[in-house]
View 1: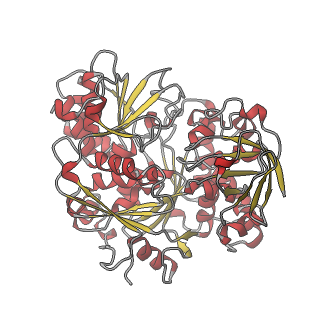
View 2: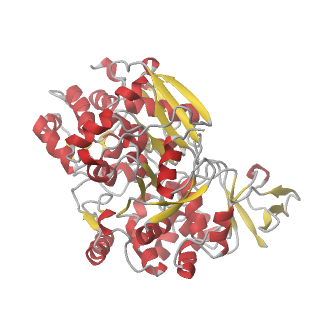
View 3: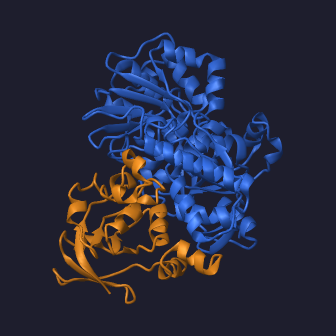
Length: 164
Length: 417
């Protein structure tokens, strides 16, 4: 069970919003890079986010670049999961590869600041603030297997090959 | 039931019958990283415990995004990449060689290949019939070590394009129009497959421009058949033996078919801050532009530079317009010098940037000032993309970019041709 507060964003939050190219020189200094997480979408996010919180997007979350640093800085901020109406392909795969759950649901029903409770096994989100309950879309089994082992690299470390 | 191009290639490379929706493990023919994703890929590779590269001579490391490096941190990343290349035996592409995607199609990609790159525009090689897609550092690290990766076989949209382009209209206008029509997430997880009489006659340069932007509609790949035009291209690049014909089966199953009449297309521009925010260039007249960029992996090939040079030759940009030219590769630059285009550009007041990604992703060279607008031939116009969230990026063809440089406002190239 994951519990935390929702940080609500709009549609089409791109990888440039999440971690702009102008900070590419910090990509080998991850703690410094992470200070700029989601800066171009909400400059106050990095100072407000607390461990366990959720990033809640609209449609096509994470569109753009293949930079794995985008889900990485969100994970480093302590975010326990990303919820969105839909998610871009490369970002989705990258987040799961880092062990960061990306959950698909109707995020229109979630407001900024709402307290959420996510039950990954039951596939539900309970919005404690509004009292509403949402159903999560199914993550493909192969990605659940990667997620369960904490990401792709831990999966390979353990099995020495794809174990899907 | 017949197969789409994606199903054909993934069947061949997974050694089974790959149908849309299946999960397959496929052989990877070529894998690569660039300088902003490579350092993390190397760290993930080293953390994974894999012993070495599965295929060193088909593993490439490119220094193209910050080339030459604008600061010490990125220079240190470049040292990491050079050290890894030397120690692992993979191929290094240095500062000034050009953008990874252009070098891949010039020197490496073959019809029927599976290619993964840690850069979203890896899809470019779909222009010659390779199943080429962008992935993150962890996935590419594993492809480096195992020589294989897993895919969900995508459903395919058949894009059928017929008719002749009008004067001043090119492949870039077609793909901007298509993305405007289906949306920036209109093809998420899907393959785009291009068909029709316009495609049959289209140059490889145009095919690469379209394939390059498939990801801007969310697609996993943008695939073209490998045909006589592909064969001639590979022969001209000195690797005719890499050719094999490739086409989808006539009875392949498509999720949907989208028909486009090329004759009806007009010069098209994507407005800030999403690629699907398309409009006609003529309807944006009066929009002031301070910087024009011609080049990058989307439109930095010889054919693109020829189009732009024809419009700019003997003229000067409007007052207050900076004109930047970013050839996609060293080979393109050399050819453009031979053809006299570089002289035309320099005489027209342009700045010639080294072959590479140039100002496209806001690392260096041509960052926008607050409130400034740029018309670029690149592929992405996201907020903050060109180094400043207070900048505005419009995307267009080389002809539209050249015409806009002359007038200082977004201009339909037919007005100046």
